[in-house]
Length: 319
Image (cartoon, rainbow, N blue to C red):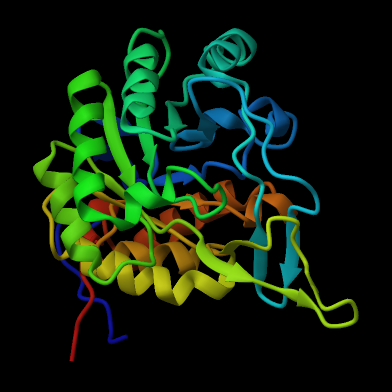
């Protein structure tokens, strides 16, 4: 990657740079969010992280009805990441609203709910019901999780089904809508354009990479589900490449996800075109990662004399 092209307004060296970003109708105070599936529903990290300092909380995936998830073992740590097949256990729409929304409404941080279903009708139902809940700022449409046997991933890797579920959800909700794209498709640009055409306010990518690990002593898979999704530093270069391609294909905001453990990882996403980022697996081992990355971005912008994080978006210099 070549040197960064510095452009836009210059910081005067004393005024802190503006970290706010817009995702359609939603404005975040910083570009750094926490990713779905890695931060619970908020209370799990409230004693460890100042939630109000996050750009947004993206909660674990919610379906119409509660689900138990996959059998154990459900995780396996690799040399540079984590393979998981949790299976999207969740309390359902009613359970989430009852058990977690009173807590989340105490904070100023936007709440984005990751939603999923096994049919187009289920996606539509979840979106419509959450549209009537006070305190929800947006919906992240999970059409790319590889860890359940029905729905979700199928919608994210079949362009016709992807368009169908997007159209249904867009018609069902006025909330900010953010489809989460799968990495294992032949042309990420086609899915990004389809999301924009369907009225998505932004897109997020990538979800975990389909993966597998085997215990050579027993010759059995490490996960009860056999396969799972790989997250963490191992997928970061893949995510950067796909974010760059997607950002170049659409005019709506892009959220970069995948293997952020330090400020430089987030900056890579922004430089290739992401307007915001999500910190995922790193929160398991170091809960303060998202806040440290936020501060690191601020320091980088000041050192570069840039007054806004938006001045850095898409400034990569290609050969």
